[in-house]
Length: 201
Image 1 (cartoon, rainbow, N blue to C red):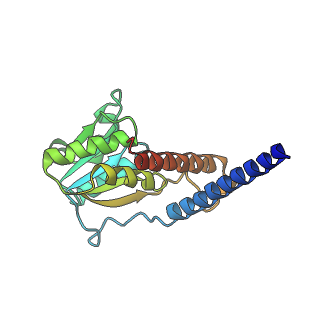
Image 2: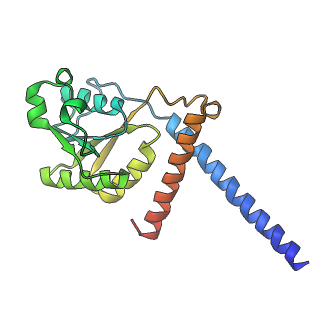
Image 3: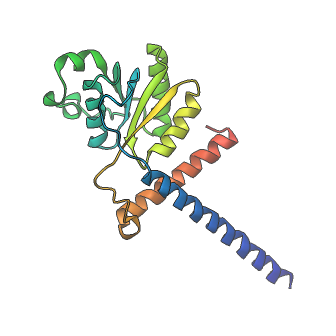
């Protein structure tokens, strides 16, 4: 009798946990769906720094467009692998030489989003900047903002979500690649949230 009661209790605990996880995941997906990539025009307020998190060519191009439009003083591309050459990341046709030489910094220290936040924090301190525009994919933005705001609570962070064509959000449940990407990112977001709550980050 006692064993049966324990099994029932365990069943309800697991069911409740799964239900909470599922509800949280759907909320996360709705949050990502709500992101819109801003137009780079006069209505977009400039910031001191533009920070691109590597992970897709769309992000880098968006950062370059922002810099060319005068939406930032300097552009930091954070998380550039040591083997990646500047010429392959920044083609000659993508940026005028004067902007390339004065205003683009390749950050090669970060290997994950937590590292991106630390690398950006150092960059902001070195240049005495207080505002930044954070450029990353829409599905990556919630976790990025969480970690960046934790490391730099005194900075003003403006999200600039990029919408990759490869991510089919409207029909995510029909696309294995998109679904697995969202599941993975949601779990990483939960992990980061718990780590911050426990104070281990």
